[in-house]
Amino acid sequence: MDFNIFQIDPVAFSIGPLIVRWYALAYLAGFLLGWKYCIKLVSGKEGDRPNAQDIDDFLTWVVIGVIVGGRLGYVLFYNLPFYLSDPLEIVKVWNGGMSFHGGVIGVIFATLGFSKLHNIPLFKLSDIVCAAAPVGLFFGRIANFVNAELYGKVTTMPWGIAFPEDPLPRHPSQLYEAALEGVVLFIILNILTRDKSTKSGTVSGMFLVGYGLFRALIEFVREPDAQIGLIGGFISMGQLLCLPMILGGALLVYLSAQGKLSGTNKDAK
Image 1 (tube, rainbow, N blue to C red):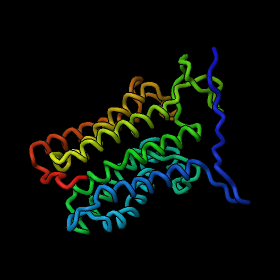
Image 2: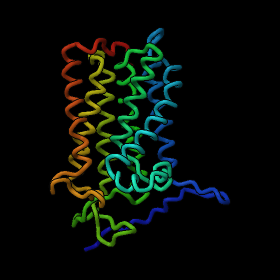
Image 3: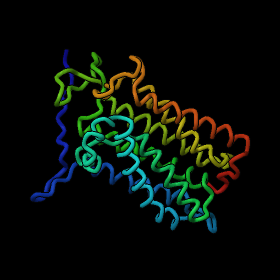
Image 4: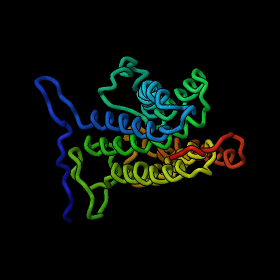
């Protein structure tokens, strides 16, 4: 059966000894475009918080939260025995190993700290951040595809792709995630953000529920991590970590609907 062969060079360009990879450019694009989208969401809200300056100041917090949380999450959730045997490997992020769920935890702490320090309503800030998060998710999953990593299980579908380290055609699960976690989730959250009746906290909750459901579904066709496999023979680590996201997000949506998180997006544009 004919299938596609992966032929993308992960190196975007090089200048002498400097090598710039598509992976790094994708992260950069995610942060910058997500930041710009947040600025757009708060524009025209004179006297309201968070404002454009708050978003500018918060960007550094987000970057640190994503990188530190993502790295520590990978260490704790996916390969703890290895890193306990060689702790110095933890700081060697260039060797790979980032966890989205760890990144979420890092950003949650960053949002809590920043909102408290600057006296900004927590869920007004988190709703804006969550509305922009799918932008970064889209570019992150495209980066995974270009890097030929986190691919899917073997498939007979005509769009199966043979990646460099495996001669068998596999689901391009990175592209499935880019479509659902990136494009579809962005559309859903964008509609909620622009709806003036949407209560504070709803977007944050729907982000957690939406991502958790999409990721859990795609995990059925995604190759589980070799060092873990399927927990109990039927659930992946990714699916397990999505459960608290879905439950926590559903709780936020419920509390928001009950008006217990205060405020609405009346000024959403």
